[in-house]
Image (cartoon, rainbow over all chains, first blue to last red; front, side, top):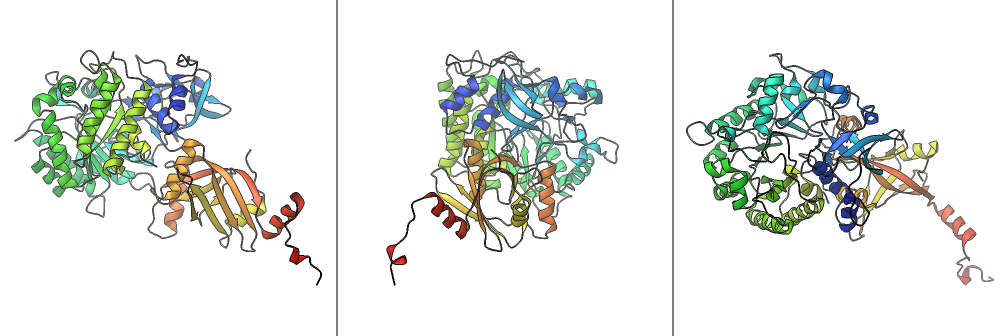
Length: 420
Length: 155
């Protein structure tokens, strides 16, 4: 059993923050801390894993679990789900204050922090399609990755910002691609036919999915910046669209920052419903340092401008941007003070919201393969204040965030708070 | 302490002629009532409330209740006009998984073009008989009687 993180008050850090913020959901605070500190499993917890029922094999763009069947007995679940339906995408984190332990107590799977039993928890259940193969013989679990209510598709698994080493410093996408390509023959690019067949199979299961999300690495090539990336997404989205009876289908594209005429083409030629382009860091100076490739190719101000332009095409509530919450405090050039980091981030989020673009944050986890791997994440209280701040900004501007809510995505504590 | 429902009450709750009203409250304590024809008692003893709408006041209030320890009250009036009140707390909000999909399929099989937001599992903590006869009996047994004197005046 690991030790809980104690504070001067004698309470664990988690309990202390819950007590300090009585108006913030304890379950959402727990989610943020689970992602911030990471999770491991006791041997007893593995007794709850049922490979026939639970998702113990998944291939995503940043990490894979259970690529080889013999990994299953000791591997972690692809994700957790709390009693209120809150989704937690988590894994072991290094360089953190201490891992939460998922344990089995009195026959129930629970999250523990030292001796403290925090909450009952469930494992993600696997959908039917993951055991099927496409007509080309590919396992469908390698084509699409399920979340509890969302189907994730990664058409392109390498990011060309890393060609000259200028990828975002928190990101491990290309490291993960090289690793998985070598170990498990992960392809760089998905075939649209495989994607279409996988989606067709996945949506046969009643009640399983409410959204399809596409994302991948940036591709610069083509007649103009990101032209080939756009063509790939259009091709894949058209293949997916073959499976629906409606012109548009619940979907989200998270891509590079396309120019307005590119977005117009994307909207007209596919059935995609919502659009996201992650600006990652809401401060120009920190963005320039943390995202050198994005800075060189487009720049912070143009990235923002294009997000605002996208609202004119997709509509209010259908465009947002993601930030890697906390990465703005990275050393040595990030904000030294959490107060300063929060103020700068929320000021920019408010500016975007005033123009119809909402901001959601994920919890920064310094992952192996990223430049920031050795860094330390901010306090739990920082994430609570950031989540509260982003939620309040959206309320102030009347912006709905259902496109990235607890059910459709589940990786943003701030949009979890928007449930009430 | 959870309430263990007797078989006759489970059957009564399942009876299509029974009226079931779910009462929740918002952050200011304002009550909200919603009739639920779908509410029933599951084999594991939880009250099951399939909620169709993600943004209904009932759903949002139940989210608030599961976050902050709030309660829910369910009023039940059977077809033979017996009334009960069940108090409890939301235990789980199922938004995916086999149990959720079971209720989704049941809804879809009814032929209506509806969707399903959440399957709420509610742990019942209290049960009171609210029938007029029971209320009167409780008043008489527990308190000094409230009797307007004209009722007992000599004719």
